[in-house]
Amino acid sequence: MMAPAATALGFELRVLAEGPDVSAVPAVANATVGDYRDLQVLADFAAGVDVLTFDHEHVPGGHLSALVEKGFNVQPGPDALIHAQDKLVMRAAVERLGLPNPGWAEVADVEELAAFGESIGWPVVLKTPRGGYDGKGVRIVADGAAARECADWFGAGPLLAEEKVPFTRELSALVARTPGGQSTAWPVVHSIQVDGVCDEVIAPAQDLDPAVAEAAAAAALRLAEELGVTGVMAAELFETPGRGPGFLVNELAMRPHNSGHWTMDGSLTGQFEQHLRAVLDLPLGATGLLSGATVMKNFLGGPNPDLFAAYPLAMAAEPAVKIHTYGKSVRPGRKIGHVNAVGAAGDLPALRRSAGRAAAIIRDGRDPLKEN
Ligand code: ADP
Image 1 (tube, rainbow, N blue to C red):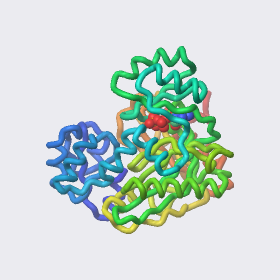
Image 2: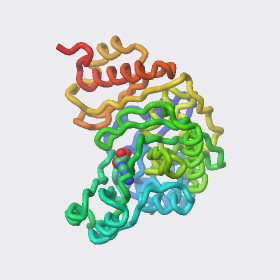
Image 3: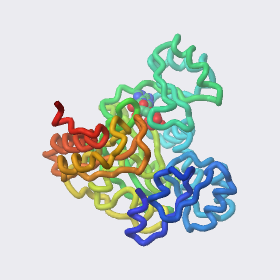
Image 4: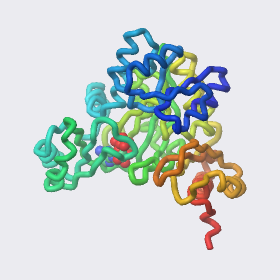
């Protein structure tokens, strides 16, 4: 999704893809297939570009440090990126900066996990510090007996244990920052998760206390500044009225993020364009809303194996909805695209219905409003 923004600005985008079937390969004219865990592959690729950036956070930090040492321009750099790669490092940084964390502990074994649960109260949330996404690597531990059943998770080192936060909503504060230090924020959004996967985003978050919205954006900008983040960063937050500044930090992502896909149609500057501007150290684009509200709805792989076959139905049913399909093969539960519905804030219920209907038609191959 960075490709259209690069084309519009006349930048040549190259991609190092992990396999020939990766959806970036047909989207980017100059695609190399190679293993991002192989330093030599990374160095060969980096030699041909001005700036190196990422669309996922799994490139080993040690390799990135080696590239920086060789003089390559890596954005964000490994010292920033580690806070999106390792949730234990992130928790410690949030604490160091005096920003609001849930109760948390680094736990080395089931005994420490049980002790944490006894002190903070059950249930607790147990997380692998690295490699998790879409709720994979996150487990709810009900009580001391359940903690003892988590022994298999401790093979690869200490884990992150957190209190189970009684939040009212999940919010996301999306910002961008350049190496020169310019930064911008988009309005704080409400992200709705289903089974640990982002399902829908409402931008801006409705009826959010303006003081909380301002504090949340300020916290994300401060994290970006203090951690030396460049490019787009999402701070995922829990809304906690009456506690802390009204939110707690959940986690950080350093790349264009699912909670920012609404910006592609709903903001003056979409997150993919902003990411390119930021990592190239160009002045950032304005982040205002194009209309009162935008609803982003993901579609996951479902019963319909041929997305394009559903286009005539979806496009005819919801002509105002913008469709973004990722070119991935359809597998159950896999994120394969999203739609955006943009309109007046007063029309939010209708925007949600339209986005939901278009996404459902593409996923299922039939119109939920025309069953039977
Ligand atoms: P991932 O890296 O998979 O996105 P997260 O840490 O964001 O993992 O957790 C996935 C989801 O689990 C969150 O969006 C939230 O719904 C829930 N969750 C995570 N941590 C907590 C917590 N401490 N308290 C309550 N719910 C949580």
